[in-house]
Image 1 (tube, rainbow, N blue to C red):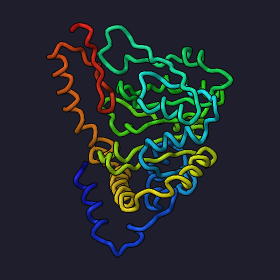
Image 2 (image 1 turned 180 degrees about the vertical axis):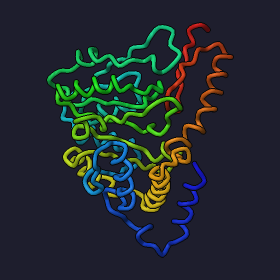
Image 3 (image 1 turned 135 degrees about the horizontal axis):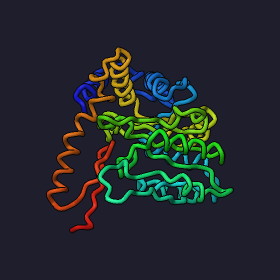
Image 4 (image 1 turned 45 degrees about the horizontal axis):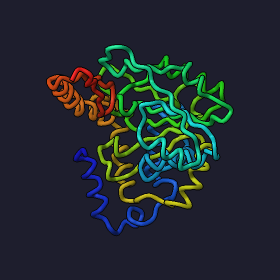
Length: 308
């Protein structure tokens, strides 16, 4: 965790007299936090995000995912899941009464980069039935480290419009983008904000997974069932950590708005910390006789061990 982030939490903890920092806060998200998240994502989603209606703060991105499935899936509804996939998707879908439908990402021969994984639109469409309600898009992708290209995402956007699907855009690794690559948020594409629930994570943004804070962003009608579940299950998230997180985002957003992108923890700091570690891991895997598939984003790496 960056020291400036832990310092912010320390400052909050040293003022017990501030009841607005240490007692229950707004159930759907601490006001200061939803305001800065709305400002930040209005910029990156290229769509005005209403802090009162379009943001829900949750106990980690994990719970935002589960709320999305539980809130929108009826028994027997199908969900397109691209494999390999984050391991919680399938059990969460099943717990919500849904049916996961796998579609495997295609992989070019002799792959060396996560870009060698490709989204096969025809394969996805072949799995869509009258019961299909939702599609999960994990971008950047866990565990491959793939960043989906604009061409792939635009084709996917046409497909979900054609079949009137809800998209769960799990974008928790959105700030882990290595140099030379571009993060394209699905809800920023034409016509996609109104059908997308975008999920983010404080743990991934500021290397503070123990804070367990995440969020769901989207139009009010998509977040409504998630809010109903949240209000009657968790009610509200930790106030002091939300206050500290809000300040961290405010500091970084101010740097971004000044155009000092090289000084932004979110835009460049995280990736610059991860890049030498990624390269060191790849070197070690090669020396062990494995062939690493170099990720474009994130902190996971897949390796081919067939020659061992």
